[in-house]
Amino acid sequence: MAFKFEPDVMVETFPLLLSGVKLTIIITLCGLLIGFAIGVICGLMKLSKNLLISKLAGSYVEIIRGTPLIVQVMFLYFGIPMASGLRIPPLTAGVIAIALNSGAYIAEIVRGAVQSIDYGQREAGRSIGLTKIQTMRYIIWPQSFRRMIPPLGNQFIISLKDTSLLVVIGVAELTRVGQEIIAVNFRAFEVWLTVGLVYLMMTLTISRVLKTVENRIERRGAR
Amino acid sequence: MINIKNLHKNFGDLEVLKGIDLSIKAGQVVCIIGPSGSGKSTVLRCINRLEELTSGQIVVDGHDLYAPETDINYVRTEAGMVFQQFNLFPHMTVLQNVTLGPIKVRGMSKTEANKLGEELLKKVGLAEKAKNYPDQLSGGQKQRVAIARSLALKPKVILFDEPTSALDPELVGEVLEVMKTLAREGMTMVVVTHEMEFARDVADRVIFIDKGVIQVDGPPAEVFDSSKNPRLNDFLGKVAHQH
Image (cartoon, chains in turn orange, red):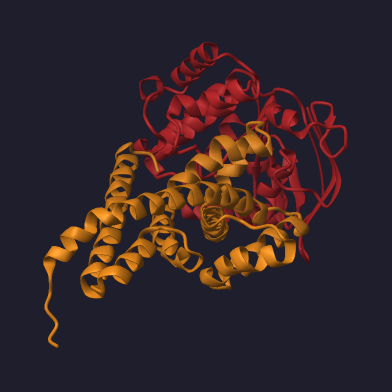
């Protein structure tokens, strides 16, 4: 039985994938939004002079970075309910997993960007009488945030692709929808090709938007 | 105005300051000279508590810097600082650099602060640069903005940490000119500098620091022309040689 490529299947598959696209986008956005909040808090905690605070954030980063996302997802969805008796809906578990995971990486992005700002900036802020918090808010943070944008965009793309791992807990995101279509039509080649192209369309869009944002910042002159 | 008693400062095992006693009166212009690594910048940075002292006492305008009840943020507004590397805020316009302190620290309204900022920029000859960003300025212009920024808080004393050392030679003059104006207006100034001409012309007092102690302290004429201190004469000889 020779393989015959059927482009029609791709055309038929595409609209069926849209519900999965929608969910993928929702999970990515919600996960990253929470992940950003976690990342900012933990990144700043890692910079704290208080050893307990910095070690606490450091351990979180190490644990998340050092274990596979798929294990984290299954632990959250299958492991935790077994111990606590609390069932987490798959979509919620997915968002939490992406948030915790991206949060650890964003913490490192935040820490690195803040640390990259010249120490003289802090001294200049303090010398005009700003408090530590004001110096962070008006001087260090705005400059660090600009430096965070490229790595944050990178994280955005990584997290978007990571949502495909939620297939293991049955969240109806893009990859899962593709799998279900194949279960009916057995056209693995055409369906996975379409799914891949849809992911690529999304990530290329993010890259494009990011480049525009970076250019705009560059054009505004100041570093 | 500033009273330093038996100031010691260690960086790890290295003792940088070995007991500095220094008293500076309001309106005085004091230049601190000395070889690099002598501790002269460290003295200055201790006066603003950018560096923590190891032992001793520093009183600025009646506030003991290390007393627990002292609000260090307040004291810092009374002692402005001008850095060798300018340290302007690159994400803000020149005017915003100058008005940030008055607005956030002094609680001034934006209109009032802008008026003050424009006045100060005019004073340092940069009124037309108010809307520019620091990276559009020359080094000399940056340093003049930095001086305006520290003036904006109406400090009682300004500390200059080698304000012209990072500048191209042809830009040094414009910065020294602004500093001379301030000196004439009676501003209390402590200047760590390698500009011997400036020290000679403007300072009321010149202090020579070497190996962590004050070696010579006196009026410029005395320090530059009739000191018997061999270290000072050695240092002055080397500096003169460079020029």
